[in-house]
Each structure stands twice: as structure tokens, then as C-alpha cells.
Image (cartoon, rainbow, N blue to C red; front, side, top):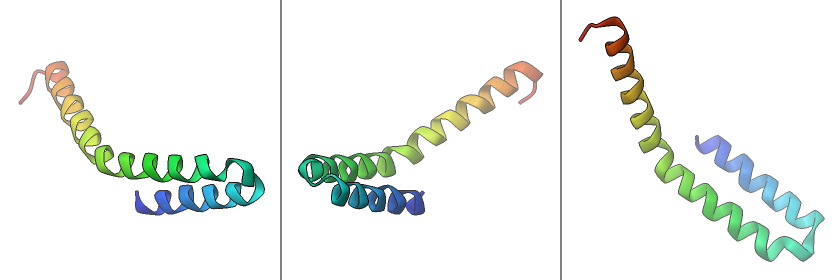
Length: 63
């Protein structure tokens, strides 16, 4: 996921250079959202995989 974070921050920097009037809002917003998603993304992915496994077990009737 780190390469995606780099792309998001890079795009925010490019957008900030194209729209300097929005740079003060754009950069902190993108950076904070990127940090948040990097922290909680793996947790939610694990939760989704656990639920999918439970669903598969219920569907097939196996452990």
C-alpha cells in the first residue's frame, strides 16, 4: 500500500502546483487521509478476510 500512498501524495503536490489557491487545504487533507488509511486499512482488510472465511465455512458447512 505504500506505493499508492506515494502516488496520492505526489498527485496532491502536482495539484497544489496547478491550484495554488487550494494548496493550503489540499496537501494536509491528502496527507492526513493517506496516513489514516495506511493505519486502519490493514485492520479492516483482516476483518473482511475473517468474515469472508466465516461466510465460506457457513456456506460449505466445514470448519
